[in-house]
Image 1 (cartoon, rainbow, N blue to C red):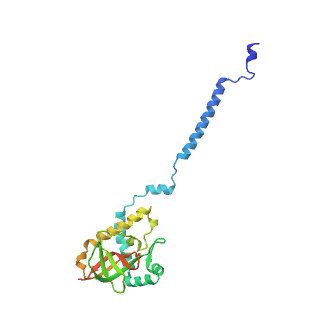
Image 2: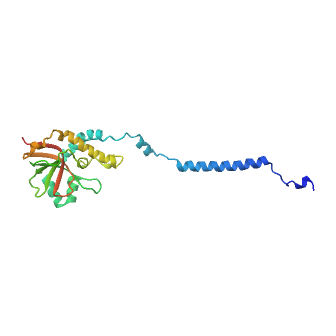
Image 3: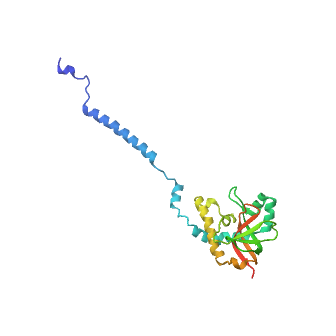
Length: 224
């Protein structure tokens, strides 16, 4: 037997076999890399880009501008006599809300109200006011230092959740409006000097019951 008889019938050059093997492996690795990049990449839509470019919400600046230009004027313009409103709520809460109030979604209605009554002794940040025509209902005016609630934000009806980026900003706006009101209204108000006097109040309220009416004021005037 000769050396020629032992050789393969169709010999393939060793260099060609190596090139094909490496080429297929490189192609597979490239495809895998493309898949990984696709799975791990984050694509940003135009709206997301706009959010990133939007200036950060400043509740203090917002309240400083909005309270004077929108909130206080709207509440003063649309204020309903509190006795009239209380009677309407007692008769038909939903009808009263639709006629006199504003609300977001299915939440409680907020109202702009006006009242004149006799002030009592302030306690725990609340000024009690006795108002005729309310029966057993009690009226309290928030005088700080802590003023809570969202009545100032909600009563005008012009400030909505859709104007803000998220729930945090929406809540911060309400808090900042309360703080701005304190600077504009309560900073010069002397509760001790009103005890037993007639007071006229314009403000906003979000009553949870018909027996306790808590007002966040935009103006308080005491008789001399």
